Length: 279
Image (cartoon, rainbow, N blue to C red; front, side):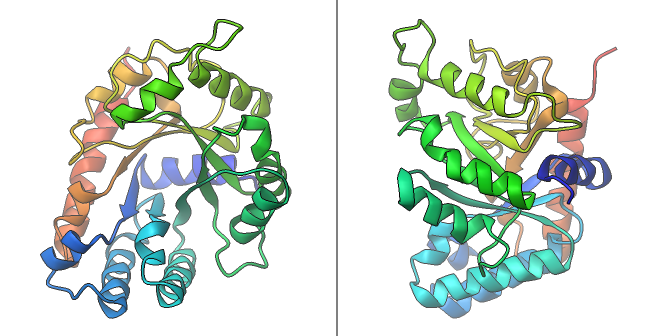
C-alpha cells in the first residue's frame, strides 16, 4: 500500500505544487449564475471537477458548504469525491474535525476508512483537545494510506490567542503541535503522512518548522490577501514541502472551464516561481 505522503509527493512532482478548494458559498454560486440550491451546488462541483480534476495535484472540498444543504448536500459531496478519484486527483476534505475517544474514532471511520462513502485521501483536523486526542485519526490514516493535516498557525486573527499562548515548558501551543506532528513523521520518506496547516498570511512565524517531515498546507493565498511570494517569508527553507492552497482566486474565474484552467495555471506558475530553490 502506497502511503499518502508518497502519493502526495508524486502528485506535486507531476502536476505541480497546488491545491484548489471547492468552496461553493452562496456568493460564488450567484457569481456563477447558479441558484443557491442543491442543483446549483451539484453543477458548481461538477464544473470544478471537469475543469481541474485531471490537472491539479490536490482538490480540497470544504465540507461545510455541502453540509448546509443537509443529506442532499452530503450526497453531492460523496459524488464529488468519487468524480475526483476517477480523474486521479488527491482529495483533501476540509472538515477540521477534533474530539476525543469514540467520537474521534467515528470521525476517522467516516473519512479515512475505505468502506465509507466519504473516504478521502486526507482530512484537516483541529488539535485543541490535545494532539494526542487525534490518535485514532492518525492510526486509521496510517493503516489505510491516508493523511491528516493538523491546524498549527492559521490565518484568522483570532487564532493567535490560542496558538501563540505559551505552555509551561516554554513552547507555544503551536510549537507543541508542530513538534508532535514532526515526531509522527520521523523517518518517513519522501514525505510524511501527517501535515500542518500554516496560513500564508502570517508572515515570519517565529516557529521552527524545519523538522516537520510532512506537507505544509498554506491557505490564505489570493482573495485572503497573501501572494505566492509570501511563501518564502512564512516557510523559509522548508519550501519543498509547501502545498499552496487557493480557492476564490481560481473559482472566481468560473463557470467557464477554460477560464478556470487558465486561472489555475496562472497561480501554479506563481507558486513554482516562489518555491523554486535559491542557488
